[in-house]
Image (cartoon, rainbow, N blue to C red; front, side):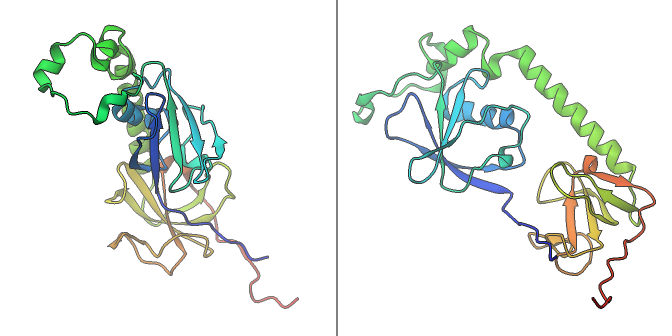
Length: 244
């Protein structure tokens, strides 16, 4: 039986609305590889909401409800979210839409805005919500630091030429050879470049015009170090020449 691999973009373009708006929306591009918690953190900057209390609803282009993402440690790309869909943010922290927004009115400088006590920023600061919650911010930074250290340690345990087996959740295990260990230009962090034994990859060792190693088309792939296990993994005999 022929096996296929589905190749999708690492990014998704979404329209963002919130409970304080009526018709206005903003379009932004997000990485599918971020967690839902990190995604909510980015939505804080767009909506003024609080990532700890906001709820999300995803609608397709026909305004049909698709899902309600609610698992903070789950990757954004694991939800059925595609380009052009709308993510609606529901949060009591967001101030209601002002129907007079189209009317010319005075503007405040950043310093004057910072002095006011009736702004979203002031509300978040008073209640220590979102990015103004120092303990939560430190916790996230420490968690990110530990993840980066673990990634680096796992990456340094691999070397070019090692045989390996991939162990990606919800995907079949694949064997191959480590061809690259290090950081890349297409994404931050440490990555392991693998030449698979079968044409089940996504590239030929190059990504976005940058070559990291050489292999045949569809034999190459890049994975996070945590998804690679090196060891004695001989190439399997697929009996490609056997007559049936």
